[in-house]
Amino acid sequence: MTEKTDYEALAANLLKAELKRKGVTYAQLVEKLATIGVEEKEVNIRNKLSRGKFTAAFLLQCLTAIGISTISI
Image (cartoon, rainbow, N blue to C red; front, side, top):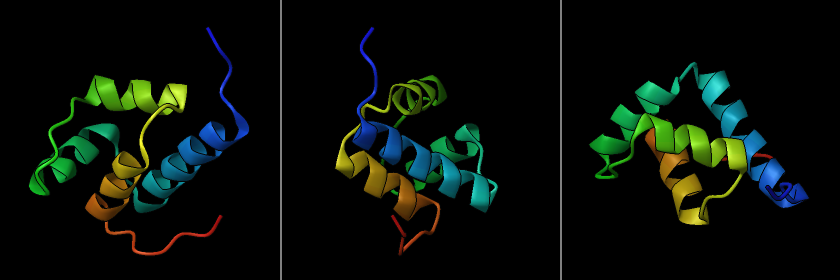
């Protein structure tokens, strides 16, 4: 298994931190994503964040779904 790059880790940690800050679980994220027309399964989200392998579009969808309009890197 390959290691996460620094940027993959940064993206995953950023999304995890925003979820935690908003108090949103992966199960709740699935529901919130569905409201904006994005179908995901909880296990897929867990795997994406664990691996740090997801698209910028997925990151933006998640942030939009949980109500984040600005982020600090």
